[in-house]
Image (cartoon, rainbow, N blue to C red):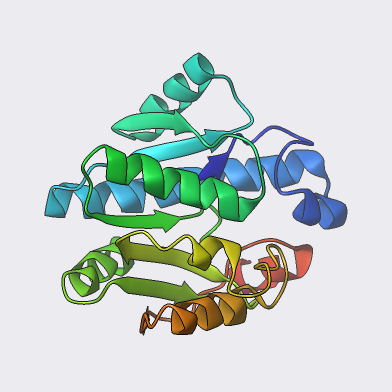
Length: 198
């Protein structure tokens, strides 16, 4: 899942620290990196690589996806992150995909082996999560459809906050769905996050 890297339309929290143009340039580099790693993982395991885009119309999104090496490009649609994630899962399941892995495009440390491991774990476990340093997650992989993982159990998932992973784990526990946790990773959202990659 990626947002078109245009100044003022992506990485807004990062832009506060370094400016909109620089934040957009970083988003463009991150998107290219993530798609390159995802492409390598997909090619090695016969998976389809789909880029879900926000911030562009259908034709422009398709051109961008082709330039990045995606096999197919779709639009994310409206709503909060949870709704957009669930929409991609439902679309993939309708199209016949059994196991689905969803990631964002702001992962400087991502490598193809992370994605390969997620799919390997999904062969035996229904839920895989990649915990993020900021309290969220950088990857969710599912073999099935559990709306509560995106809506919350009893209370809404606090998207964008530091309790996303905890709330998702609580929703998984309420569904009697034991998660497999991958390696802890950091995404790049704020200026302070840049220090690790300078």
